[in-house]
Length: 288
Image (cartoon, rainbow, N blue to C red; front, side, top):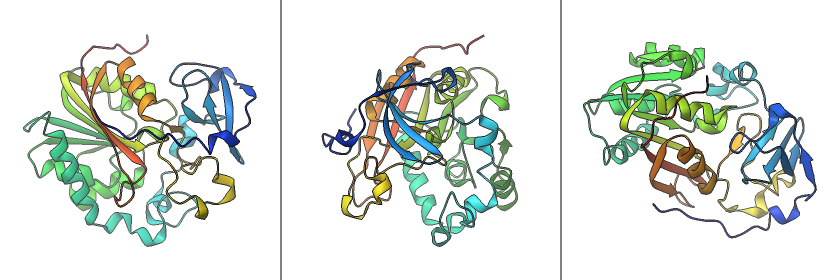
């Protein structure tokens, strides 16, 4: 396993050090700790760092029903306050497909087709297209009605609208689960990982990408003052911010062994993010 660890803590030295006592519904999703340190305030949001495990997250934590409302057509087309920018052309940028082909090659170091792959947070279907072309039997899952309809109508993809638990997939029926830029968006990341464990066959693979909370700011001079303490802050849609240490802890506690973790630097389109590949090693049952 390899990863880049950020030793530059200058931003966090500016944080207020007094503890905040969190409401029970806002307790840390990783360790259930209820004490945190303020990272920054971006009204109406606050980002805090758990005193016990170091996970950075948004408080108050939104309800799932409210979080889902973000992902409408405007989010993907650059017409809304959140999501992709108008000049990004997310839906039509075929160069993104190359990235997902590259990711499939990484997946196939551990699991090769044929097999069943579920892509959670599939959006318009780039990952599903890359997997389908390589012989995988694919299912996409996404909460966005717009994205699901786009993936079905434009690319004839098999996509379920809802969350992964909503899909009610049979236990131990899936070979690979992918979560590309998904886990930071969900209010309960632990629940996602437990459900992933349930549906994966023994030895199945979970592959995910998420921002690396430890990655140093590549250009502090250009940062807006409100984000000086934490340049990755995007609290309108990113609810949890994992470091290599905290993502590995989450996966270990939900029955996975991390076999590869890569953090991407300046010059890569994934700059400031990490990709994690983990094998299911233990069966973890969902809470009763």
